[in-house]
Image 1: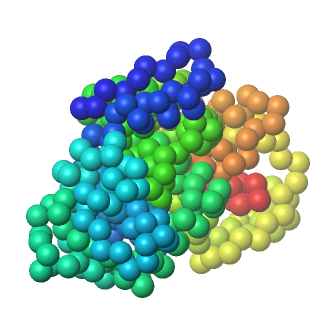
Image 2: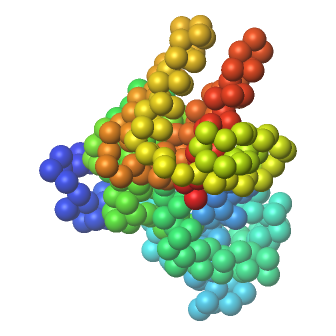
Length: 358
């Protein structure tokens, strides 16, 4: 395990300088075997196509493309050995991790038709001679463009931070966010995430209750575990309730009839107090959970408690409420067969109110 620096618990004021210093002192050495969740920007096969590296192999494959692209700007048609490529581009600090994965990375890039290799001149690790194909040039250019895409980078950083904390927590390791610099999850399209990226990602994830703890030492929350294990990424998780579901049409005011159809919602609500409604939903979900086996009750209690917290606010966070209602709906959908009728009734209310949030 590579040693990461210990972040100043008072805040992130010096994090940028510390990250840059740490990167020079300690090249990436942490093997991360699991791939990023689907949709999170992980690259297939050699790893060159994605934004966030899920393993050291992904990272090395991407680096080789980046460095070849840079070298061939001045030496068009060059056929450098891997060792020469690393030296000429000034990336000697990454030699340990490159040497560990270069053979597999070169094979993968060749299979994807992103590089050509002069096989007759040797196939011995750092002495392998390579050049970029047209497809490789296009992919390397796309990587450069992705680095300038603020939206893609910030979104990828949130996915990477959440997955990194998840992995570290599962392994019983420290989750001091500064240490992400020593893992492949700290990189986006071949460059490290900035301190500002990391700060924003942690605070965003904490604000959505996917992470807890502090900005400096986040911890994974149950919702974060659910996001990593069951969804393609943070965006997919937060938008999981946007698809078609139970359709409710209200005729008249809140005390009118309910018409259940297949999809689409039309509604006309009046005189609704958000806090009171959320409190009722919370209690209903809690009571329903008590009908289930004890090992299933904590999930219902967690959502109910969060709904109550929002109910106590003068202005509940509509985005977070919508997410909680979607989670409640998901729990109800998984209810035992003998409780499905009751769950369906509760789900109608959740869906109706959630749609009313806009």
